[in-house]
Amino acid sequence: MIYPVYLLVFGVVLTGVLGLAAGWVDRKVTARVHYRVGPPLLQPWYDLMKLAGKETLIPAGASVGTFLGAPLFGLAAVTVVATVLWVNALFPAQGFLGDWVVVIYLLLIPPVAIIVGGSASHNPLASQGVGREMQVLLAYELPFLAVAVVPVIKAGGSIRLHEILAVQAETGAFARSPSGVIALIVAVVCIQAKLALVPFDVSEAETELAGGTLIEYSGPALGLFRLTKHMLFVTLPLLVIVLFLGGITLTGPGIALAVLKYVLLLAVITVIRNTNPRLRTDQTVRLFWGPVTLLAAAAVILALAGY
Amino acid sequence: MTRDQVLQELTGRFSEAILALWDVSPKRVYVDIDPAALVGVSTLLFRELGARFCTASGVDTRSAVEILYHYILEPINLMVSVRVSLDRKAPLVDSLTGLFAAADFIEREIHELLGVNFRGHETPRRLLLPEQWPDDVQPLRRDYAEWDPNAVRDRGVR
Amino acid sequence: MSFRLNALLRSPWLFHLSTGSCNNCDIEVLDCLTPRFDVERFGMVLTGSIKHADVLLVTGSCNRQSAERLRRLYEQAPKPCVVVAIGECSLSRGMFVESYNCPVPIDHVVPVDVYIPGCPPKPEAVIAGVVKLMAKVREATKKGRGKAPEEVATA
Image 1 (cartoon, each protein chain N blue to C red):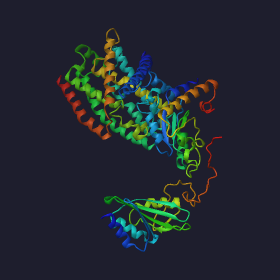
Image 2: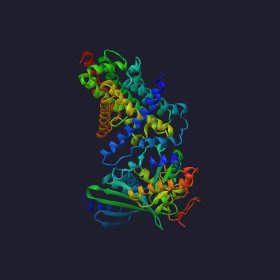
Image 3: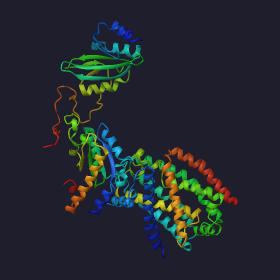
């Protein structure tokens, strides 16, 4: 069984390294937009190493096992999702039936890990953050699930990522069709919220909630949460590429195209992040359950109708 | 109401209570009154003339403890400061909380910092001083002495 | 140099606390964090929670009520943590040395590592102070391998 190798190489190492680089790109571009210099390349790595060397303080009254286990929970989920996606993207035949379901399901876990960790913190500000995080999660999961069904419909009802990629290899990326374009736009908005980036980062609003859900986390536990977020920077765009943009191939000229797809998505995310103010919780919920869900429904209907 | 009318009203009604009137500038008037007439003068200024109560300030001069109540008449741009001089040994004056609620906090502050007792103030609790501050020490009095044995009063420079 | 300390100096996260200042020093600290002086190029980020902080920036002459809170916050900061006292009031209480409400200077409440004088100090002075701290800690750890970072830093 070579899955443990895939887990280690692709899930942990590759995603981790790319994730830290993507996090740096985000910070550097934000700095440039603010007309300043920004952090050096290895800054996310230094942050992680520094956090690894600090002590972990557990608040009195917190439930210790949950408090320390929550970040591991989230990291484990992201690692598995990343492994499945990389394996499907690079070695399509090694996927398994139902891996689409597994990926969509496991991507719920990182926000839930933050919610669980925040609730275990025994802190009223963390509870406020948890409440907001829950509302935002409910808001964006609805359209996200809807548009994640679009590639399944267009691939003839198959829930195997390998077949979704195969259909795209034959008929062109799903983003070329009307339903695919709409679904892509909705998916990009949803992953902006999944990554807890402005304009949807109300649950991590440091200036408002003194750190929000992660207020009581310190040291390695905090480092694990940050690593999870950096790994999501790679995993979520990769999911969008696999579902709508035809996947990636690392052979021959395909490399340039793969890099271009990823960089373009990262650029879109960063630009949205830098040009928008933060939305309040009720505005976020109204946005996602209103226009975004309508668009997602339109995409599903168009996909069912064959467009 | 013009400035002169205001001053006439004041001096007319409380001619026995006013000890001195300092008409220092077009915008400022200081009126020294007998403490017993405080509520009457304040009612005149606040209720009838429509002045706004800004704040009260207190000071321990060597001869007495003085409290100044500052009222401002915005339409005519005049600030009237009403001064009462109280006995240093047992300063006691009527509370203005019956007239307006804004007097509550400032009287608590004057009480804890200068030791003035306000007759009729319902909750004379501590406002600004920390919990471990001793009760009978008033920091803004002239005879305040260092009571804290752990205080360090040099700059640490040798 | 010790790996932990090296990483700490490359990514110092700041937590700002005013223990009763006139806010001028707080404004200057805020200036430091604006794009003009850009401390993010040193990896410095302002955090909202003391548990995420590596550097505690203290301003203000510590009055009796703030002293308790300052002590509690310092204890909640995960070690290693560096304390920076900014402005005259936090060095020695400045003109408030005889004040009834400021009994002790800040370094009797928490151990201070860097003092940045000024009333208020310019952002350039704050940055210079932090850079001097980093140089001093690097220098000290070269001489004192095996000691805890805080011991060496305050030596």
